Length: 387
Image 1: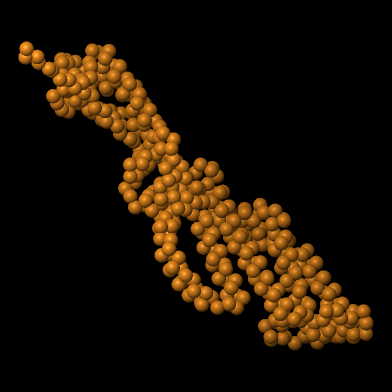
Image 2: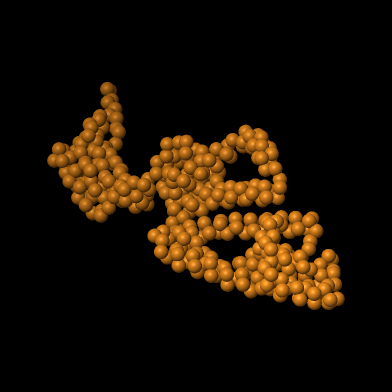
């Protein structure tokens, strides 16, 4: 019984270097120990521990449960005051995550910590103590890793508030890879603390990893390309791109493939390795887009009519707020027509606006030319009857 109180009062007991109890403390404790020794009830042992041991276990557990929650709140509020003095807002977002967590989110951690520390006041066999220590390591590691992952996700969601934000979507795309890497490292940490030889396991995984890499080269290539896409951002969801003759809007970027919706509505699945290994045209990054229209005019058109064509084109382009005329001129003459080329810039990266402007211009230029008795040329042949 005396050893129990030495354990309670000596804070260096676990390190194996006990500090002598002061004389005044001994004078207070000795009468209590003598009374306990004379008490048959408190000294009664059950499963290797006296009734007093169990009472102390319950008292310590209840006291810790009462003080752990206020202590955690005090720590959060203290760091909150320090975070307000810093220039970055990342620490504020981390504290915001902990402040918004419900009481149920931390109750499991409080119970485990209180129970683990209270059990130290009971005598347990080395086998049971080893199981308890191992369970505590596993639980705390899982809690910390889960909290870190949740904090990172909370920071991303609080920084990019809209679901349509391309930066937010790109960061969340790479999140599964980060989670797998963190959990693997946590697993090695737990195994190392449980006494397993992690180096031998790493060597075995290395040999197995080489075999697995050879068997899944295509998947690993797409996975590495996915990391490159998520970090370098050559494309984002919503971009209008063209790659290997495939043109359309990026709808989803997955770990292995990217989904592109073409103009006719069909969906094309392109491997990520193809995205990073091919010439990619991203039209959404353009500040302006250009289209050329070739006007093939009939050979019978007189010169005064031909000279009107650039002015007609210029007049039509001024009707579009987002369009500017680069030039319109007579470029070539072939055996059937005079060929005018109109070069127009559309001052937007929006593909829908671009195609609508181009289509509308073609309709209007045809109508305007016919109104001025200017007609397009058609290939024709003249057959002479020698009879």
